[in-house]
Image (cartoon, rainbow, N blue to C red; front, side, top):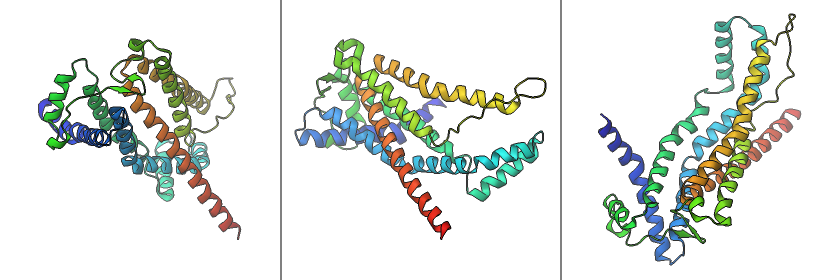
Length: 281
């Protein structure tokens, strides 16, 4: 059972990514660009990010719509408090009227999972001690003999992409996990800015206990704090212990996520201002 699934996964995800990386590597080596493997990883990451952009845009559009209807959702919560079935019916009706598919916000993350795993597995192939063996195994899954690796230079901008920052033991290398954590922080802040709402002040019932809404807000606030601070620190810790080439991929992905979100935010703001002006006429 597992073997057919693994074969399907490799055929659909891993092999195409390896071939795309090999294509970029071949073109860069042909152009005599130093650090061809590093720039190939950058080009591959940008390509994957652009291919995923429609799903990312759908997630951001969904988050914006959810933000717009949140006051109405809050009103429904108050109006139908204690009637979960009625609340769910009214909420789904509101989603339909606003053109929101609740599942669409998760689509970007779901699609990313196999792609991320395939990228990780692909890049791991390149960062092993015995490059001669890995070259032989990689060449077996390349679609065209033209793309076959003859040698593999793992050095990029003075860094060994196959080594971890701990192994290199240089100041420049130790900066990488710090940069990775910082970029992950800004990516988290950017991509959740439209989905996180300011929390209301805690309210209490007559007996002095917090009401359900306040308790839910406290839980959401704790989760937001973990996503904002704990997750970047965790990613930075992983970057300290994994090959620098994988951190390079992660950082480029974070940079493009931040850029794409900011562009989307500006576009949404422009459209929103245009709609307001149209309504004022």
